[in-house]
Length: 481
Image 1 (cartoon, rainbow, N blue to C red):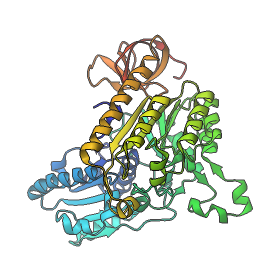
Image 2: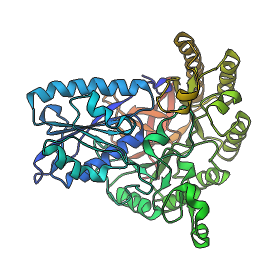
Image 3: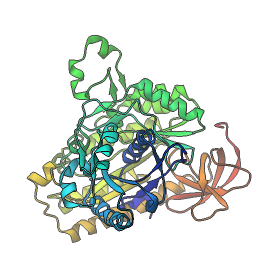
Image 4: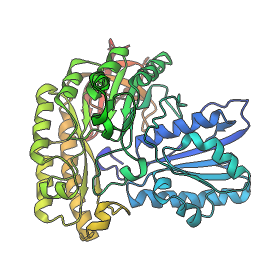
């Protein structure tokens, strides 16, 4: 499925090299956003110290953990279907224990233990350090649950196990939680209030990754642009900070510069941004350092100011356009991607046409598009009627996707004839004789393998393309090696 219509919730099993000293097998399956995959690496690290090896074989597992997403109903239904699969395996391995982690655990809490009889343990995103105690509880025959949200947990002191890694790209979490309270979103309820991680621990992790051979990192957060370190605590409490804390505070622009300078040859990406928080300073920092990739994921969600207000999105389309114009002025070759929701409560045809007009104005490089899914507990679910017929939602979504597909092709074609730096990530999924990698704008490129290897920065001349993939010919190693 093409990136522009990525509506599926990706489930991945994660594995790491076996430690012979460990005696139990851990199987982790992760769904949803990149933050969940990053969290699974933290969980694996914690449990490696508790005697667990990770395995890709579900049938050999002593402990099965599913790291869940609640952003849409489809995500939760996918997890429930997987639990049925675990139940089949558990009949053959009655000692096997099953735990649900992440946002779905936080949202449903003890209901999961009641509704899904196979589940032994429920653990929220801020409670992973309590896993050793919870596992002891279930080993002794008791159900276990910890879904307490934290005001300060960032897992900055945990060195993540890089699971199922290509050894080239890695996630580095910089914030947790979200303060924005969009009316359609469960994240503030499942991941708590926003807090930022100590920049020194972030730089240390980046340096360690470089020393281990990694060439690219993605700084992660629900809203990276609002990163603010002033010594710890919730972002909302910054107004109570001392003069010294205010004077030495580190914002996202500062953090980007710290990381870019720490490892000048390390590619740096970040996700996700929020229009209301992205500053000109961040854009200027991106332009200043060649190793910061020229791509910004900037969710707009709707092209209608009326719908944006109903969503409690704290930007207008006019302010969004001004931000986009500034990005293109300061970084002319910067790629922009988006999130878009069709069929939000009360959305009419005028609102929908305004959304299509935004796509036409910006011509995004790619996007993630969904029809509205009512999530229990959100303000939209409590106060707004889900009044758009499913047929209408899907028709509008199809029109959005069709227009975005046109723009994807147009934007990808702009790279033809150019020579660009590609970081090789691995073999092409469609042709083992080809390498696959991405350029600075996050566009996938494929080219003949020749004598290059995974992890090389290669100059590639772009000769052809599909709507979402560049096809080229390597002409030599770049200076990035």
